[in-house]
Image 1 (tube, one colour):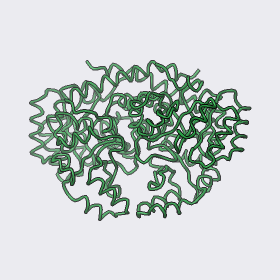
Image 2 (cartoon, helix red, strand yellow):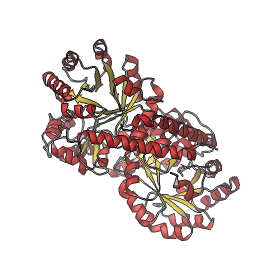
Image 3 (cartoon, one colour):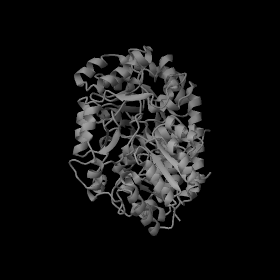
Image 4 (tube, chains in turn blue, red):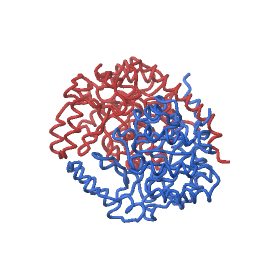
Length: 320
Length: 320
């Protein structure tokens, strides 16, 4: 048994740091890649030339491979991809859109491509168009989320049964016990967002990081379900959105309430009242802000301990 | 490393068959216990004297220990408990209510008691009043559900950190990979509902069992969130409830829509239009109706295989 995820991306450990908007700049991606994981720069909050700058800075900070996350719903997705190829990036994670449209361009450029999905149906599609791996992300994940509300525990075995390409588990994973669980479910890698959003190298606003550390169980909520479900920390804006939904607000009212640039105002600028703070249920497991390399090492140690404890238990499970 | 769950209940395998209303009669409980798991008779849909009859029949069908699930919100909860004690039952799982009120009565009667919770806060409470174990049940579970919407993957490690008593994982578990995952997360046992609802010995209506087998990913929905969140298969009544919620229906309207006896009409009588069919997201992983003992054996074999595969992977995780 092996993890194909380490092989296809040329990395040491099958741990991917999610390419989050406003959070995953060159510093975070380089720190994770340098420690043996796969760091991703989140292009979702960058114009093409800013992305180029982040790629170049990451290159000066690490010799290890890193990748770029590109939300394909961006109008200038093609411009972002062009920058990625011009800068000789060979690892791309796409999300929020249809990978088929841009895949030929990425594959012609020599890229290994993974796409993020919330459901089995989408996972099959991702495989059929020729992606190299699929990130299956459950209901507990921070940020944008599927309509099926399928949790990570439910989703991963179903996706592992449905596709032959490697499955990377995402959603709710903040510690090594959950990493081990993801592998037991059939994943060959994990993508971790919230835990890395609260690291020293994250470019998130200090208030955002502190909110993650402070959050307890129940500290996040899935809202905007009629337009584009998103999991947020329970800050004032999120609570207004929840109230609007409880009243039965329609799509138009929700779009108006959502307005513009709330992600930037929250996660990057620290506007507590008007901003959006995207985070997963895993916030409740994040207890301090640490350097990304320390986080990666702790994840691996916890995961190895959980794996060892299962070995000790395997006699309990074996039918007699 | 061991599972305290097998020790405290005196069973061979740490697999508990949930005591579901209308589904978990003496036949199912006896079949699971006889195969080495822990079968639970679901008293939630029984009057005290019917419960007594089920207990006596289960006794004739197996010499192995079995237990009773008692929803404490029942007005006659005390009468049910009296029957349990009179019939010398020594294993009780309580749910839906406050265990503290009835715990002295149960402990005086020599019972080992576990209580079902959806959150860390409730788990702490359960430990503080003196329960012997806690069942932590995630958002993906069928039937009644917590307000925090915490998923099993998120909930189990948090509860394992918060309490010293054994944690039994529930919600979304239908195969052995998920069982292994639950143990990696810190559980020492699993409680499985939906998978056992679709066995030959289940007293659920054949239409209910077939709905579970037919359900695909996204086939269940959490509804009635303003009154008492419940996860249902997407049958006509469930869809009416979802529509009402989307329109912003208030508590009163939802209570009226819910009415009476929908659980019985659906799961026991097979009324497709008017009944409620409670099932977890794990429905998507249930592909056939089998005898309960075969299900238990398959769970154990899959779990052992998943555990073995993790052992093979442990070098991948160990930090270098």
